[in-house]
Image (cartoon, rainbow, N blue to C red; front, side, top):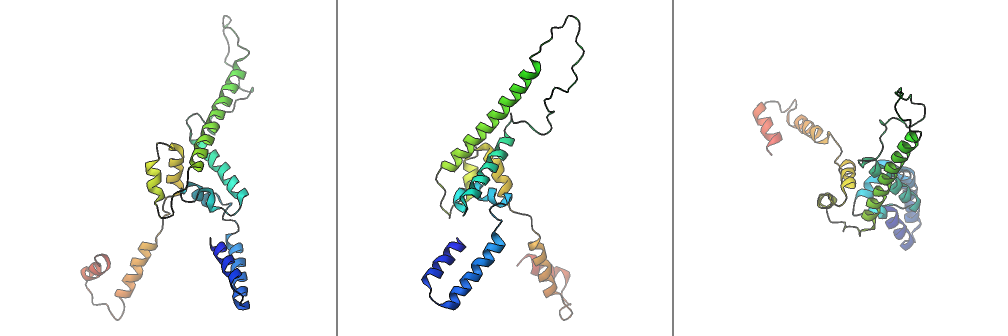
Length: 207
């Protein structure tokens, strides 16, 4: 949106200095923000924000790649999706010694591999359906709260709801604590050091 607004202003302005400023601003934005659409945390956060979805991408190919990543993460959350902890199904596993009366099933390994492949396929298909159903719904108005949307629709998109809680969470920050320390340093100084601790506490925390 910044680049779009800048291009419109440049098209309407004929002043050379203003155009040079616009060119420099556009170059700086390209340098600083060139990889933001390919960064997983930013791209998935944009997709999971029901106000933006794929509308928040300038590049259609980057939007398509982000949708593919979202489907993969959604499929990994489904109950029948194979996990990394599952042992690989290979023919190198040593079979248990069979009793002389036990019937040997030569199709056991093939049936097991086919069952795992069907489970994985079902998880992928379910993830694709859930993501496509979410993306095909009309976006919210920009003034609406995306967290309220996910709370309301968590039964409709259970796996995407889980991902939204992960990617749309408030990042941890120490800014609030640092502000309190800075304020305390302004109140209690060499020239103003006669304040009682209780007075400083009231000034800091009960303003």
